[in-house]
Structure formats: C-alpha cells, structure tokens
Length: 228
Image (cartoon, rainbow, N blue to C red; front, top):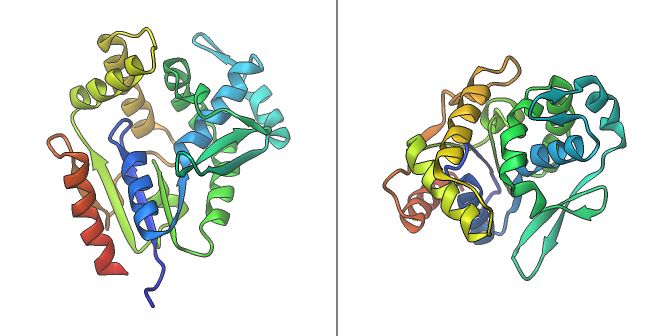
C-alpha cells in the first residue's frame, strides 16, 4: 500500500498553483486545501465589515473580529473540489474578484491573521494525504513536507493568464491593472516581516512560463510518485 505524503506548493500569485494542486489531489485521492482562498475569505470579511478599502485599513478592528469568523471547505461533487464558506456562506466566486486581489496581500501581512489560519492549516494536514498551496506552506505550515514545489513564471505571463480568467468571468478589467496587481502582490508577499514568500531550501522550482497545464502536471506527478 502506498504511503500518504504531504505535498506543499508555494509560489507567486497567478502561477497556477491551485490548478496543479486540484489535479494532483484528484489523481492521488488526496485532500486539497487552497490557503489563498482562506486569506481571500478573511479579506472579503474585512471589506464587508468596513475594516479595509484601498485607502483605509482598520487593522485592530479586523484582529478583534477574527474569533467570530468561521471558515470551511465543503466538497462540491459537480465541480469535484471543495469550495470555501465564510460564516456558512459560499463565497467561492466573490473572493476571486480583482477588488479582493488588490487587498489580500495587505490582510495576509497581519500576524494575527496568519497565526489563526496557519493553525487551521496544520490541523487540516495532520493525517497527511494532503495537497496544500499558498505562500508559506513549505516554509512555515509543513516544513517537513515530503514534496515541496515552488512555482514561478514571468509577471507578464501571469498577468495575461489572470486577465483572461477575469474577463471570461465578465469582470471589467484591463491588462495593465492586472499586471500592476501582480507586481504589487509579488512585492508585498516577498517583503512582509511575517512568513514572507521565499523558496524553501529543499523545494523544487518549476517555471511554467512555457509549460502547458498537462506538461506541468505530468512532471509533478512523476516527482510525487518518487516520494510515494
């Protein structure tokens, strides 16, 4: 019988971490946890409650409200992956807006937010058999993960992918706005004091600027099988 392992996928925004993680989890029969969705849900909570906007951030108000928040992942059999619920509301589509993207890195900088979510993430992965993607999975959440990946691609490539994704959903955005968002998030994620985005020493870097989704999956599945 194959042993179960933990797969940690870190990297910059819009590198397709979630797509890859979903593919791996489905193929291996593992649990998939999208930690970015958790930070986005907290950001949506902050926006809905007036704690944050483009030019305002009531950090203490957000911190004080954290104990009232419930986050859950509930499996949707039609989509074949789990969707995120904030206080029992399915917010999967709401958290993917550019408005949330523009603010999520600022919320993710807050140490109290990170502490709450990292604790939940560690609990979710206690029994192994999990694929988790984010910014600090291989460095903070699962430093002993058997397989660590670090995803990267040029900012322009990532912005184009994100732009196409948003316009397909009907969002009224420009490529320039999306590129600016990608570059700003890269800077904040890499420079924050608490758990900055860095490649773990034992992580395998995958630049997917010129890889198809299938090519990337095949390469990573081979790596995963070596550990299993």
